[in-house]
Length: 475
Image 1 (cartoon, helix red, strand yellow):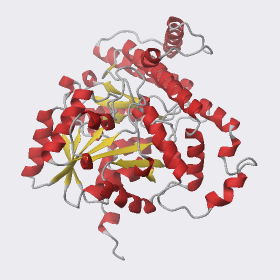
Image 2 (tube, rainbow, N blue to C red):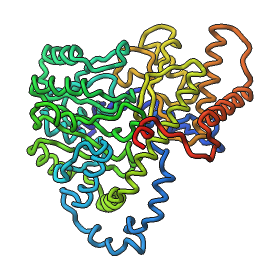
Image 3 (spheres, rainbow, N blue to C red):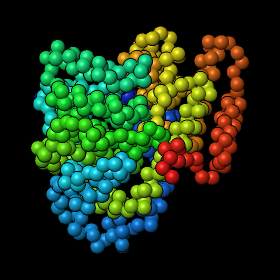
Image 4 (cartoon, rainbow, N blue to C red):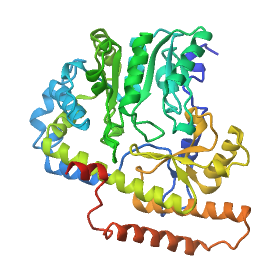
């Protein structure tokens, strides 16, 4: 057998994680309301599908945004020909403007610092290559996105050191936790080159407050290490308090701006993961220069750049989209968490993201990660829901699960909630014997609950959605 590389034969990609195992379970038996009603429902994919009707309407009204239309064909040749790795000026300008609007217009971004990449995955790897050498380390607060083990480590050789955060203070990032992780890295003879924060958090759905961010900037300045702010969920904040970007904080405190870098994307905020639009925005000139050269390995197609530049240059559309997205996320989050609470399932209080951090600790047979995995297997194999166990996010406390709620239609969500309700009734029956409700009764209960929710918000299924508190405060 011909030998191949260690990267090719190793398991650095991280596919042996239950996070990816859940995806495989879904892919082998995907739910379909007619063809496969007993299939696995995908609740492990953080995807924003709630505003596609709104976006598709704009696309229909602006055929010039497509090069494959009579209205857009005059741009076909110049767009199809070679584009250098700087990206189209109109694309960078539109993205920079959108980033500012998402942050409430409180900060402006320089289009010349916009570096494009193949999604946030490519952007994170690009930053890792620019900031650290193989064997050096980044600190990452837990729980954190499982894909970071692939994005930052697999090909770069960089190590990740967890900053352990706890449920006792709602998983806040404290100075003590940062110092402990930093010292642990030193004891392991790892040179710490940076700290990666995700704000809003995946998987928590929470945001970092201004004081915490200032403390983080103070920490990285004192240690003289880089700060990478993953802000790909910035526009998903649907309730107060408002999102605060690291770009705002560096305007308020003294810091070495060469240490500050932002990763952004349109995958979550716009719901365009298939377009692979990732962005690196660095305040360090050398990093911008290096990242731009590296972007040759993962450019955004010029056709996509043209579409995005046209769409994001439409101020009326962007302003309306930001409001619409917050409204839809608020409505879905409110209904989903209410439904879970009615069957005794709690979650971490959150105001952002496309998911909740569901608390199933009371369902564990014992407080161990093995017990968490046993429960997860039941949920995957019997309840037929792909939810992601907390341990796959490097959470040390067993019993937490990430559940995505924005990647499905209402009917699929109702089926998922019915399955959860049935599962909880069975669990309660095992704990306290009593007669179980019939499946039809459970379905009726869910239907009534939905009607009650609509009624309380003065809604019919076709009436306008209730405004989120964050949007109401602005209008």
